[in-house]
Length: 383
Image (cartoon, rainbow, N blue to C red):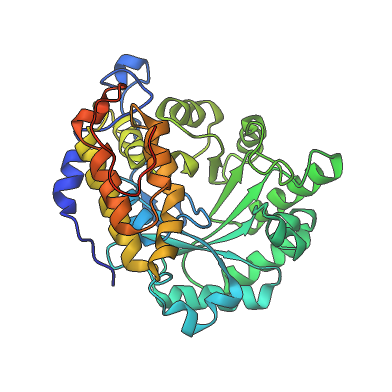
């Protein structure tokens, strides 16, 4: 249904030999990570060859980001959150922004809703559209979601969570997973509700449970509490547990996977504007060499491909530029002059200005921290 403009067979080959990682050694073994981990991840009938996937990230994981993740080694990708009311509307779901691409499978869809009947109808509609598994979001901390008693707000209502899960599970034949946070807050009541939900979903035989190690009140502040995730693993050894939270580099991801005992990892913010993280994590898990950082030219190719896909998907142009800016923050972090680069890229108002700025900053001459790279392109902000 979708098609890439760039020669992805070639790019994936490059990405397997050129990239970066927080692991400084060229090999995982030299960092004490041990031999290749032969740990496939099973989610119901779906078997992934490595124990991680690209997480559902609202506002980020549309087709271009998912396609990048797949081509850099993610065995599974997810949509951003989809309201059940939208999923049930065929006019909405026919839009390219929602329909799964033929080159994305396996791909999962994440549903956000507060009652069982419509959630089940939405799940059926998404499976008919071509999605391979369904996730139910009881973790979203966005204020507008909480005000409607959806997402993370439902962590205080174990019975309602289980009712929604049962309705969806009984309505479809593909795997169904649930995403949780470790409570609404740190109160005893909140934590008790969390454990009730985990216990009841385990009894129901859920295919997998993804847990983000923060409370809803924390949103993304502080640190993810992996001790709680590890405790879930200890109490429910037969439940498939996916850990999430602060997985921003390869070394941390490997350590969390080993120390917590979880079955797999959901990679979220760490891969925004950084598909090389996915490539390097796969390499480390397979016992292959960790590659050096991508050159500026290789970064330029990926950024431009991503931009062109976004421009093709989002109309009008100003909407596409606005959407793409949040990815530029991640991409710019790799540049030796990242502050100047980010200011310049964010200052672009049109696609022509943005492409010119990318071409300017991702030349070899700009790798030096000095200011001798020449004049800035029109419409760009200086250092």
